[in-house]
Structures are given as C-alpha cells and as structure tokens.
Amino acid sequence: MTLERINNLFYIGLLVSFLIFLLPSEYKMAVYTPNLLGWSMLVLSLISFSIYFWLLIIDFKKKNYKRLQKRTLFLVIIIGVSVAYWFYQAYSLGNV
Image 1 (cartoon, rainbow, N blue to C red):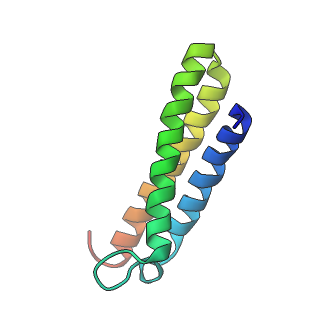
Image 2: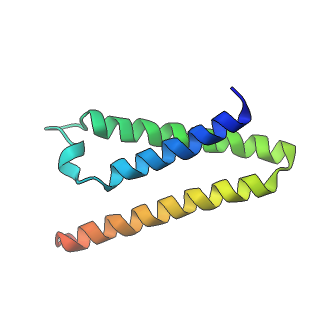
C-alpha cells in the first residue's frame, strides 16, 4: 500500500468510527456485549489509532511536519467533539 492510501484509510476509518459513535447506544449494544455495529466502532478506532502512530513515526522520519500537524489536528478535533457529545448525553440523561 502506498502512503496516500494508508493516510486515506486513517481518515475514513476515524470518521466512520466517529459517526457510529454518534448513534444512540441501543444500536451499538447487545445484551451484555457490543453488537456488530459496536464491535466495528471499536475495531475501527483501534485500527485508526494504530495507523496514526505508524504514520506519526513515518512523518517524523521524513520530516513531513505539515501532514503530521493536519492529521493530529483532525484527531484532536474528533476526540474533542466525541468527549463533548459524551458529556452532553450524560447531562441530558441526568447522569452528571
């Protein structure tokens, strides 16, 4: 795989994982464990983080800081929005 495809895989995987995260929890949970949609969110998240750290090392070696900065900003924005949404859901359900 080329580096561009791996980079695109990171963005697509993280974005799909984020969109699944925004779905209500009853769509992602079975009785005691995550259902297929929940497992796919977990797997995509782990793959995206693994690809992020792999590309981080490659970008440091090639001194490609602009790409690294863009990817890190995208990751931080996704994590920030996810945490904000998580607290919003907890507050609206009375769990906070």
